[in-house]
Image 1 (cartoon, rainbow, N blue to C red):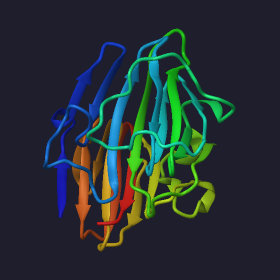
Image 2 (cartoon, one colour):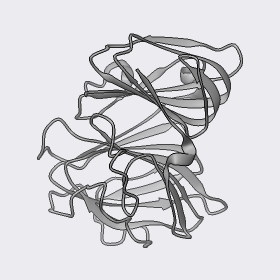
Image 3 (cartoon, rainbow, N blue to C red):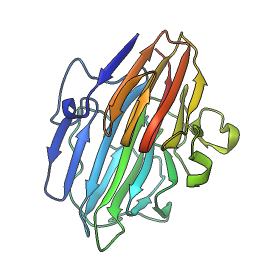
Length: 259
């Protein structure tokens, strides 16, 4: 069974400094029909204005993946086992603030296009995220996946995946065991990324007992014959095969999830 989720049906919030599309219920956007898929809880497509960003705020017991499309995202955290507010999709959006205010000697870095950052919130972490590009907006995806157990030690990992490694194929960028050089998420899930244009085509065998969720980041392409445009998504249940083809400047993420 294949279910289409159109880009225009997503939630949207305009905070001035932040414009965000919500694939699933988040903050002030609530739709009981769209609370997540399997153990995937959040896909937010965020655009942060130059000189702005999320002030220091807390998460716990969530695997958080950042995937930058344009610009650059500055990250600072404390990685200390504090007890901040829980990572709940119903929670509010962190307020505009200053970079790394109140953070100590945790991880400091910049995430650029091609980078995948994983932050395991575990027992508690505080961090900030800011637009590192002084000239224009930073455009990125914020992804939350439920961990397979609560109370793990907080952790951080960042890797770069070149455009060539994703060109015309699905490159594994996140998995529960770090295989094939992917970042390690503490969840029964995997994320593939791919770039497709023209005659480029990819197939992936699926476990019909799991859920496959395809999110088209930008461009256009066909997934199992279904045409998609940027922001559209497909949920595949009890399917055996994924076929991606007919891309036009397409960038896509494919999620393998537990029911």
